[in-house]
Amino acid sequence: MFYQFACCLVVVWLISASDEHCLELPPVNNSIFVAQEVEGQILGTYFCIKGYHLVGEKTLLCNATKEWSAPTTKCRLGHCPDPVLVNGEFNYSGPANINDRITFTCNDHYILKGSNWSQCLEDHSWTPPFPICKSRDCGPPGNPPHGYFEGNNFTFGSTITYHCEDGYRLVGTQEQHCTDGDWSSELPLCELIQKAPKPAPLAECEKALRAFWETKDLCKATKDFMQRLKESDLTMKELKYFLEMKKAELKAKILLTL
Ligand SMILES: *[C@@H]1O[C@H](CO)[C@@H](O)[C@H](O)[C@H]1NC(C)=O
Ligand SMILES: *[C@@H]1O[C@H](CO)[C@@H](O)[C@H](O)[C@H]1NC(C)=O
Ligand SMILES: *[C@@H]1O[C@H](CO)[C@@H](O)[C@H](O)[C@H]1NC(C)=O
Ligand SMILES: *[C@@H]1O[C@H](CO)[C@@H](O)[C@H](O)[C@H]1NC(C)=O
Ligand SMILES: *[C@@H]1O[C@H](CO)[C@@H](O)[C@H](O)[C@H]1NC(C)=O
Image (cartoon, rainbow, N blue to C red; front, side, top):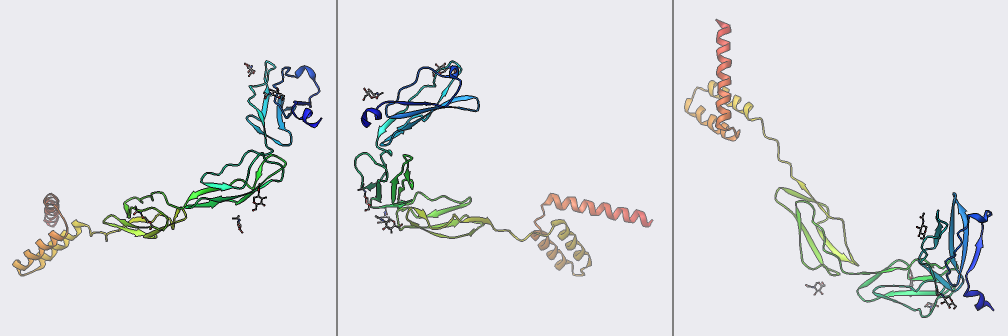
């Protein structure tokens, strides 16, 4: 008697105006179909009966031409869907019933992330959700800008070492270990090493020139001047321009005193 009932589609209308109805009903075995009006639209929802779970669209829409949007729904045997666990195992066989409980284990070299058990609930869901089995080996690590790592083994237990290009300083952890599929710390950074700012070359030149004028020993003064010029990184063009400026300045001074 129950089985007879179970294989037929049960339809429940929760709408008063019958002329609003979509007429042809898509038959889905072992389901209950509930139609209701939601924000001016007529929605149909499938619920699989106890012992069956839903695959495909749960909700259909009755559109302007009074037809249900294409149904692909099925109610499959098993109150909850068959569990899946890639690279792992679980103690389960046959269609799931309400309150069935399964436990999960991962294969060697894999680590379980999530809950190691799950239960089939009244609402056709497995709760908590299925875990995943994650490889205990690590993926290739990243490189920070201006940095690189040494090491070519990314398996569980391996170590890699980070370095920075010349002129950059490493900030963070230099050595990383692969533990259970993840590198032990965040990527380090390679920070530009700031050089001490150079004194302005023209000011240096001015100083050198003044020293030259004020020194009595011409030979030593010339040597000092050349040395300072070299240190100041001034190009010949810049020096020439600077001396021209000085010349103009002197001329102006002389004109003023006349
Ligand atoms: C629904 O169930 C009936 C009776 O078991 C069967 O004849 C029919 O093929 C089923 N329909 C679908 C779409 O599975
Ligand atoms: C209504 O749905 C049917 C079936 O999916 C489709 O053939 C028809 O074009 C739809 N009409 C409108 C107005 O969307
Ligand atoms: C799986 O194992 C757990 C604990 O070992 C047990 O409680 C549960 O009933 C088992 N499930 C099945 C389907 O055998
Ligand atoms: C499941 O995990 C719990 C702790 O999270 C642990 O105590 C228990 O032994 C595990 N069961 C199995 C079968 O691995
Ligand atoms: C990588 O390291 C693991 C453990 O340290 C070792 O067993 C394995 O042989 C190494 N693989 C390669 C390609 O060097």
